[in-house]
Image (cartoon, rainbow, N blue to C red; front, side, top):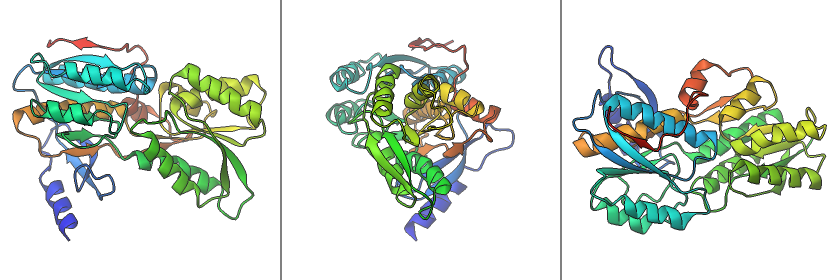
Length: 351
């Protein structure tokens, strides 16, 4: 009853005025609890920041189009609101020590608040708790221990994995002939990997698909090329390659080169520019999208609200949808992908 009432009050508190910009989001009925019911909301972003705030923003890396799209969302929102930021990227998920040092730098008086896309679920906790005594800390995209976190712009990564798993389960019900899957969850220790893997495996359990090989690795394209080549060498008769966007991107030309296009199918666990192109060309079967552009915008907007005392939604993100060759289109691209001409922005001054 308490959850139902809280959900109703949350939805009622965010009714949009006429002509206002509206973001279709899902808030968690219990903030920071991804297992709590999702509450669809019409989220009304601020018109403008009250001050030219400056943010310290941390990313795991900018090696793939996913985080480039998050960066684009933050750039667009910062310009709209009239605020500034500096971005620091760790260079990859193995680089926890580097990100801790970058987070320490965010304690500087130069920055009013911190937005962190973490490389580790618990690795930053001690430093986050210290900095949270000085300024707001907003979590963006990747899941993180909520100690010291002011707000989260994220989706349940368990559901991202489950969406990919359900797609395969619907194609291959439990009673159908068995098919084999090579599974590429992502890097060990990253805040999202254990959740996406749990969701994928749970959804796949109700199917005839069997995971016969698992390969962990950083989401850089070079690393994923090596993993895909290794998997195909070991099992050239595999039915599916399933994993991160860079894995799917790497798999398409590799399958063509090996003469396996049409014999081995590819499913991505999230959307990127290359995955989008693969879907449009029918070379990738499916990919869930969590609208990273929208998540970037929301994290920036939440940081402004936290500073200005107007933060009412502490944990929300866009709804997850599955994209197939039949459903690719402009609306999906606009919410999920930076324009092709966009290059990373590391420092943005107030315009």
